[in-house]
Image (cartoon, rainbow over all chains, first blue to last red; front, side, top):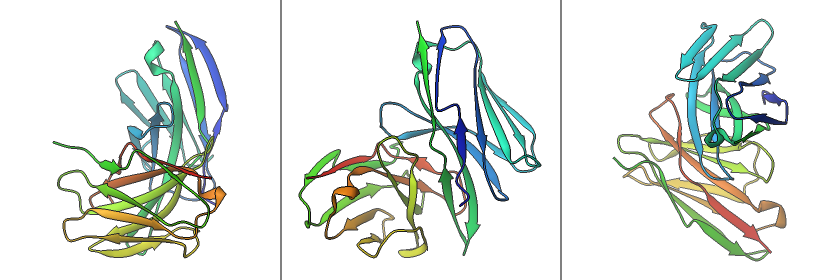
Length: 113
Length: 111
């Protein structure tokens, strides 16, 4: 299975602290993406990093990718209560001209005000 | 510009029944993918539609079928519902091989 695995499964921090989540996957990828999900609702796309990139920033988000270790990390700096959500990494595979996403089990982040 | 929309929001069915879920893609998108997310799990890929044809399918039984219409909207049909089909069903739209934008999902409960 190409499914990613996030670590930790749950994370609780104080507002203003940084949060780091890790993702590992099993096979070669084209891209790796991070999504946020609030209370079992739809997924919000946060950031995409391509297999030939090593680091990417978007606002308070920083994503790294190490293809040799098949791992990625998501750092949220200066966390806010509104960042409380589940975070998923997703890898994609292009097969038969279509791309589907393989998701991990997610990290549940709680930011305490 | 409307994003991806799904209907209904919630649905309750009993075992053995059939259900149809609907998805309208984001404006300009022609590819629709469906995912099933069980409670506490990550989404699992069901299938992807492009040009009204199923392009790729995940590890789901034939009870799960779909359709894409000329206006790119899509339906997911599930026959002979099982308790284990209870989940959040997510639709995502994109351009071919592009970034996928997700809808809010349909929560299906099978009793």
